[in-house]
Image 1 (cartoon, rainbow, N blue to C red):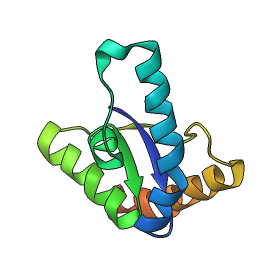
Image 2 (spheres, rainbow, N blue to C red):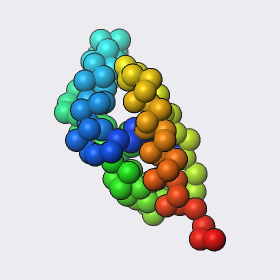
Image 3 (cartoon, rainbow, N blue to C red):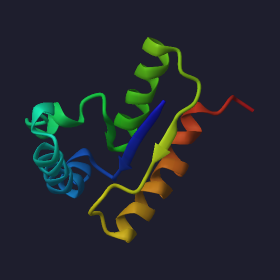
Image 4 (tube, rainbow, N blue to C red):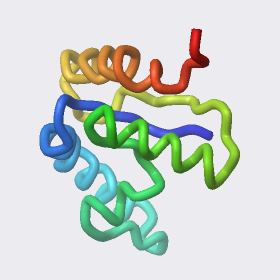
Length: 107
């Protein structure tokens, strides 16, 4: 499975950091291919397409994919279009420090 991922300290911060860029991206997609009809709210456009939230929400989304689809790995695209480099790096740090450890086998 491949997903674009963005982790922030809070769900509100994750949404604030990504919403404008993602909605603009989908508007561009709609201009290129209007027949696709990619319109809607942040929730409808990101549901089952992105993993965005605080660390606990990201863990829950990955656990749902594992339970429903049987996945045992995921390729994460961590650099969402339009995000500042420092925010991308912070997201990577949070993913590495708070999300990945939830999926490691017990020592």
